[in-house]
Length: 586
Image 1: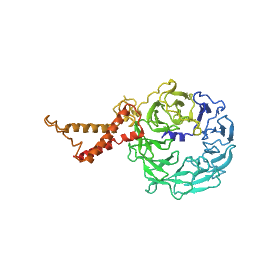
Image 2 (image 1 turned 90 degrees about the horizontal axis):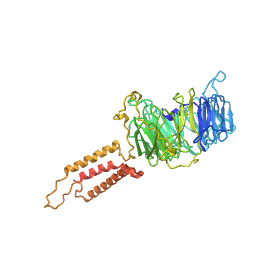
Image 3 (image 1 turned 135 degrees about the vertical axis):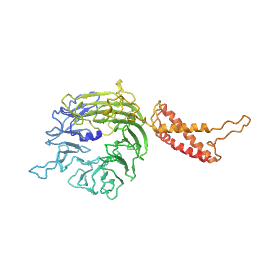
Image 4 (image 1 turned 180 degrees about the vertical axis):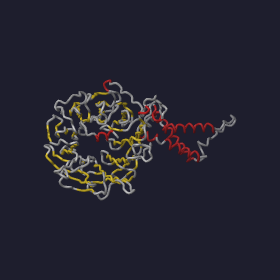
């Protein structure tokens, strides 16, 4: 199970912190509290601790409101001064959410029936803020896809009812403004941004037919903007980019029929609103652990393949832009500004984290957070939060705040007998914090993070390390090799080809003529009598020489531009072209 899935399944408690401009929230068995964040980490004076165990908690999207249920009631308060906005007598509430502008609070409690109400009572309720007057009540038996989805301006909302999508406008839930009727639709994802929006829907395959994902534009339901069909899908997850111009679909099966993986099988698909679709070609076989869009909406990163897993950045043409090599990782997180990327290994891995400059593709630091069940970026794009929470792990509960460049800024261990259920940062409106240059040194002389160890299965951890075992091998990033010139498998293969060609040329080199004969000996590989072919050979050799110079610059530590990296990727193609031209020049 991925870290994102752990967060969604934890109906536990939270804690909140506040930095001079930013906050966090934490809940646990000892109650709920709001804390200041870096650099003080003190309980926030305007928000007294609620000592009662908290069932659930959430912030509004801009962070101005906080709602929580302590098993007695649902409370809504302003984070600025702790003043009460509303109190609802809903002690069984287990899920809470705000609409994007904070005008509506949504509560959900498990569906039940009673002798007095054979059909049960509505368990999904919408409340108008401020004041929390009742807005609408629905029956929602399953917690899956329980909350309506809104456009960013709240002009449109949508929820799925009996395999139909019902659309509402201006928070008027008494009138269905439009319906999207797609036979057997089982999941959907509303695009980010303002009204009118787009919606991505999933229809499972049946009777041997393929599964379908389609993109529609509200409210023009006649023709889909894009359609992608595929097999091997028991479930899918759909992920829009921030500009709502494209979506990624991860299709998964429960069982891998080949027996190669207990994760099942996964495939990754791409769709854009212009109608283009593609299967994302992943160079290494194995599970797709995680995928994330860059906030710039023009790139996405995928972590995939049997351990040690690969991580690759792709562009909107689904072409590989940068390969990070392999390592013990199963998750990827972009910073809020998209200038930093973290590759991490949680769960059955040991909390190894690699921090990368996402623009220069240069590694910034390595961090270690063993037994973590949660990771999140602070809205300032400078700090990260890792936590060990119950019920995923019931021992060693606590959290740590780090600067991404290394070192622990603050750590908290939950006292014996207590549990930490959730920790999260307070969100802030986009643009609140400026983008700062990526730091390469640890601030304030913080100690270096302990280097992460390579992943070893539990059954082998009592044995001495075996560096020659393939299980522990890690490929260096393809386009970011340091001065030690660690070569990837592909680069090593190309190097062997070049050495073989050089040796062959030396063996075929004609012996020197006697000094009395001044006529030069022409080599067939250099000229074949056809001026046009000779010209092409010369041009290809010129390109190969330029690639060699780029490789030397990269080995010396110089950061190359994207077009230079793309030029280097054509080396093997140019070598094949040169071989073809030389053969035809004989």
